[in-house]
Length: 445
Image: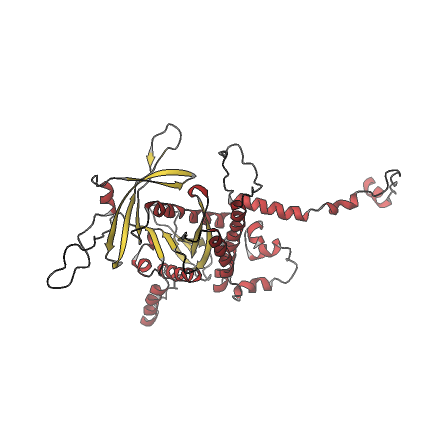
């Protein structure tokens, strides 16, 4: 795990072996550690989750963001690799890349003034079933279609949500935040008890008000009332006033304009699940001082708890962006997914251990930070924005440099240079050097 954090070059198994100085020994045990399914990364993530729960107040919920990411691969025989949509491709053209798909859960470690740092608490491989050949029989194609239902991304996410809820204390509430790909009937209908989901949704979502009025004299009582406005219609409706809600985002507190209605019912989730629809107005920003005011796109959210305060709902959703920061650090700084392994256990355990090392690094740093310890970070260069009088959390690069300095400082000890000094008393003359004939001849040549 130290090699995954500090190893030079690509984080392949060979480089991890060389990073700990075992390149001259037998390397088969290192490969079999992952290929023979001898690693349980849930123990490592459990330590991170327990440390976070110890810091949180007993009445505070655990806010967890979930998202999927891809790790690019080139081999065709690597387990779980296939053609995936490139999220970095241009919006006008869908690009496909060969990659593996992983699902990650990151929990929010709250800090002062509404800040939070997302720390990974789960990382699981979520492959799609292999598609059979065109010449395969009807039974194989039918089995493939059934496997697609059991092994899609929503099924993996719902399963891991159940595991996370089972491993948490019964009295601790769980708040999940996700993007639009997880805001669907599979996730919302299958949520465990004592869980709340906040996710992005479409601007043309069709929802209904609950039924009102007395029940009919004959027949069944309607499950849905009149049609409610879509999120885009609600944003453009001038009769509904905007509300001001403050939340922390992008390094400081902002005042957001919000519209909300609820409870509303969505036919895909059923009449027994009341929801709350929230519209967040786009935030203005300038590229430079004095330039034209630009605006981002509005956000449309759904929440399974209509009674959740708007301040908590907005702040919990804004914390979710930290999982994107986790993905960037894991891929660029730690080289997650660079190992050249092919078997199913290796492709699950080796990237997960790398992410667990990243999570434990941040857990140690946040523990020290919350205790008031000033971490010995390097002074930033002049072209970066200088920090103010308040303390700012270090970056992942700063933590890796601190860890590297600690390890190197322990390796370079003062007694390593004792053979360069003489130990004669100060009242004695130093011993004269005896000429070496081989050295003289070598210098003369």
